[in-house]
Image (cartoon, rainbow, N blue to C red):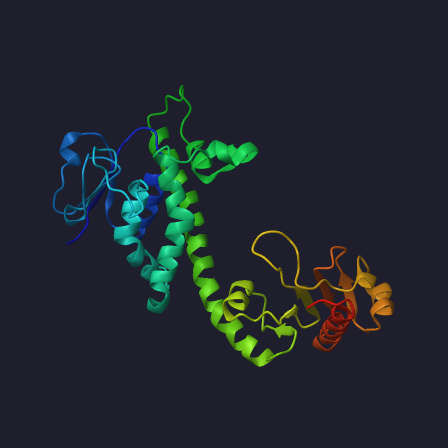
Length: 311
């Protein structure tokens, strides 16, 4: 079926129908958006997708509302908004159109659903208060999207649709970035797995470029790894630590205390490594001007950790 119209409600907008619009306009770019409460438009018909309005949920007829009695819920009983309903039906097609490989489709879809879609669902249904973010309440994504709505005494007849599209543009950037990040993590996981094999029982993980690495290290059970070496440019290499836990900043092993906060010649003298450039005072990252120099620093960091009894 060719989709010719995307139908949602007029008036004040919320994050759920804004993000639904992001997904649907990506998949049906030629369709006309109709923001209305005219009952004639809210009846399923050939070529229409109706969402966040209409009082019904029926994917077979392309209507995705959640305001009616007996509204759809997730398997765990959590309520769905129009975003959750649209993502469940169209999310995989959206990801395909974004270039996500078929092999990664389900994992990216479910990951975005958990971390991005469900919070919008819960906020829209009043099951999660932005107030739980404390002082950051006004900075939550649903809150920021709603701040784009026209103020009460804005009499511009085009203001509502103009600000709606402004919100869609901003939401599109965030959803695309979230999808890209999720897909990149899976690509990185394969590269990190290969580097773990190459590292063997050593303490140093060498990667071809900066990338998310800790999830793959944890999944592989590579507890022997303490430090990560990555290039940032021909004369810019980094030596980083690996955090013990997902939360907090405790490392499996810190860089040597004698290096903390030093730069240039001072760090070269303290470390004995020509080309050492910088060590953060927090001892979680250092830099050097060549692979030879950064690997020399990495080996010294391992020796220092062993001397301190790190296991």
